[in-house]
Image 1 (cartoon, rainbow, N blue to C red):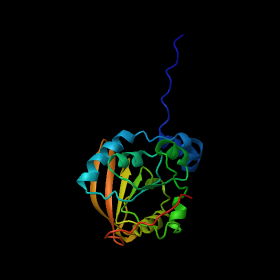
Image 2 (image 1 turned 90 degrees about the horizontal axis):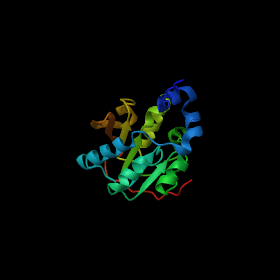
Image 3 (image 1 turned 90 degrees about the vertical axis):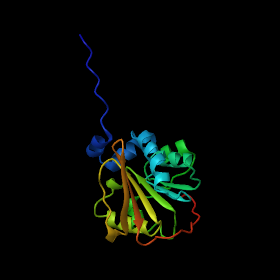
Image 4 (image 1 turned 180 degrees about the vertical axis):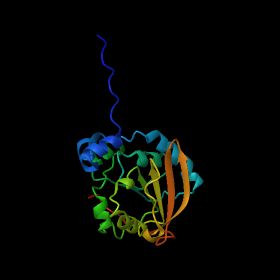
Length: 198
């Protein structure tokens, strides 16, 4: 009797839908790896110099297992702060740094007020923010950095000018989309605030 063909593992998106985002990351966050990591690295290697992104002080928001942090280190970034309430152990394991365990809800409520970065990067995560919370998150982020780089598996979310951001660049590499937004609140240099992990 022939053996049954093993079923391929369920996609992350289907697991999000069946478990819910919070439950997915609670159950799998320690071992999470973005399946698009290599494409993200290639995309960053192209757009960082092409778009003259300032890597002086970077916030890696919803940092996953550190794929963006590792890629940006390879491109010369020295100061990167990671934030992820779910995958902080995976982030620490791969990067050697501690990711702060802050949620989108806490960010919308102003927990990061006073911090300044040269660039915020959010990879494969902002589309998971509740639609009702997204404007508040976007507005808080627009006070902290002159530029926001979104890396996405599709076209969502699209940030609006009334949320503090203006789209300036967009590129797709291997079905991974990058958008750079400029802040209407922070259009000049920054003065980084030293922060300790929470």
